[in-house]
View 1 (tube, rainbow over the protein chains, first blue to last red):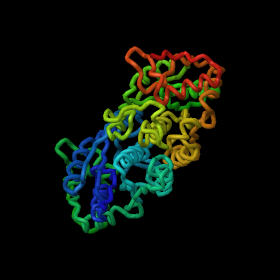
View 2 (view 1 turned 120 degrees about the vertical axis):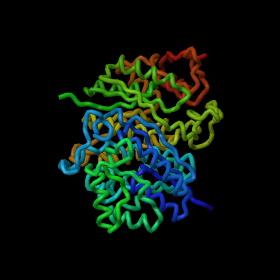
View 3 (view 1 turned 135 degrees about the horizontal axis):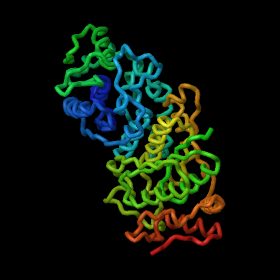
View 4 (view 1 turned 180 degrees about the vertical axis):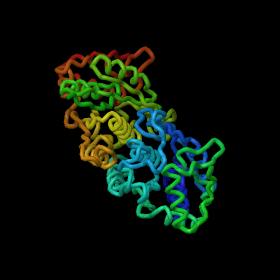
Length: 225
Length: 225
């Protein structure tokens, strides 16, 4: 019998790799993206294309309201996304309050309705050095919530939160993804993509992506402006 | 200095009592309700009125998508809300998958932006006998997530999830609320309210409400059809 999994899919490099890995492990993949008020809404289109290319069973986009609370450069028009070189605080201004908690809560709800017991997300060592809700201890704590919150947990069918990239660098993720057949030209990292789809090359996320390709010794397929 | 708190406010009897209690304890209250695809959307209007009457600083309604996953009689048009006497499974069909996890995740995001470290919700002993995400162990596990997920937690300012009614019966809640000045005519419990605002008297939630008033020895101000 096939196993169902819910995959949090952002359109970026990490979650594309996670989806390819879950497919390779034999999961039937139900991908979930969010329209949450992010300025970079183009990523949702990338997610849709990735879901189709990488063989997902279904892709849904949940429209949610967390951007309304503000407080992040990714959602708040009054806060500019800074260049990577200007990032100095321990928790970046691109951190969106409680984002991964909200995303995982939605994934949990859909998993329960689908009868899935596995949820995948693409947090990794680079992220969790800056974002509190990407740390391994956060993932472990959410897994406990998942097992207490749900019918499945109460009835003894364990829910698992998979973060298969959590110990990997960007370079290691890219090497893994290429082995799995991911076309990284189909992924987007930039927080300030131009209307014609060119990456800025200077934001936090672009710089991490460039370093990742460089470390992996792979040519970066991204179109930079 | 005043303390800010985020209060999950449904428009029902329990969360109204929680709001009144938090105000009595000196909190500046920021109330959060959800339009989540519930058939009984009238409750959001009750919440708005309660927030004003009970002295909240602000009331927000987050429009969210959990109803899209289906799986509950409260959101899914293909599942009727049953009479209380027909409820026999351990977890009622009115259970909405992962609802409290999603609600608390949103409350956490707003709390972080507000700089609040206290979140209140109105789960209680009657609920947690049937809904997995109303149990004390769920609340405790979510509090751990809240402290790991957020900037406040990382920086050592502890987040607390308050469930002040969790050990109380409906009757005890009503007595407590009357002491705090709650007007229960302003609250709604029915899952099948008529267009003119009359409660059905027969659904799970109506029956629990009636028993609560009866146990408390108080006249129920609800208009039943």
